Image 1: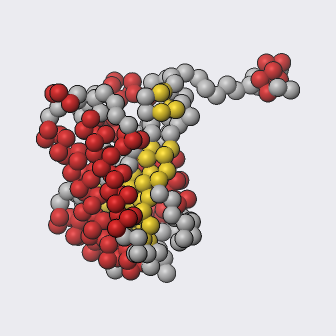
Image 2 (image 1 turned 60 degrees about the horizontal axis):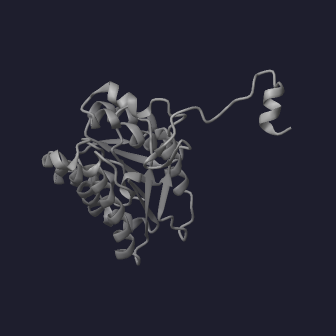
Image 3 (image 1 turned 135 degrees about the vertical axis):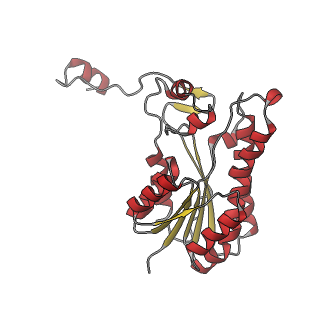
Length: 265
């Protein structure tokens, strides 16, 4: 019997990459997101099912649960995002409420709706996509860091409360991932500010890196529970420590003296 995976936030970025990775791994992927046009493209590419769904809307989430069916083996709660970079003193609380609603309440709403189907799997895995922002504070990030701390704590609480259930809970906390939309949304469409985030960083993570971590987690036996995975690019040693410059030095094509010196030969 083909296993069923549900991925929210599947129309772009990490969600879309995850849907494709799980489709390639043999899952039937139920792809959920708000934007129908992009969602149907992703679902078609991975051979899955598209369900237009806003995780903030009860009726949409109920429809998602109905479309997923009576058994769900994998749930990836990827819907989320940062919607500002405002200091606490001047933050728009409506924007903060929206961030909390999508990153925390939406995650809980979807998980609650799919719990019966996850239980029916007998060996289900819930992966919540958090952030390293859920482990540290930084200026201009108060609303987002608060929301992602919420993602982390909800994952931990579910693991405690449902320890007797056949469901494992893992949070993946990525650091800098260079997707087209994340920072663009955060800066209200300002492309220059978005590009400046990743400028001169030697190989930030890409969405496919996180999708591969999701795929790997699905291969583990049922007795192995990975509580959390923190994944950063080499250039980011911590939330506040980012190197902008060339890390990887490639030897000359002729393999000359410089190459030998670098390799220690």
